[in-house]
Image (cartoon, rainbow, N blue to C red; front, top):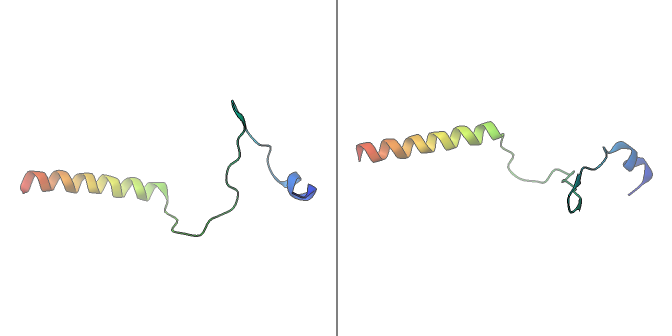
Length: 55
């Protein structure tokens, strides 16, 4: 890693087992906001409850 890149990065957090490093690069793939996932999960739960009541 170059010295220039090291200066731009924030200091690494430490964990009990040593240094902890998070992914810094974006990966290709579907990107969904956490709010959307929560809403879809709540809708799925409601749909299952409604299906159990009426069917």
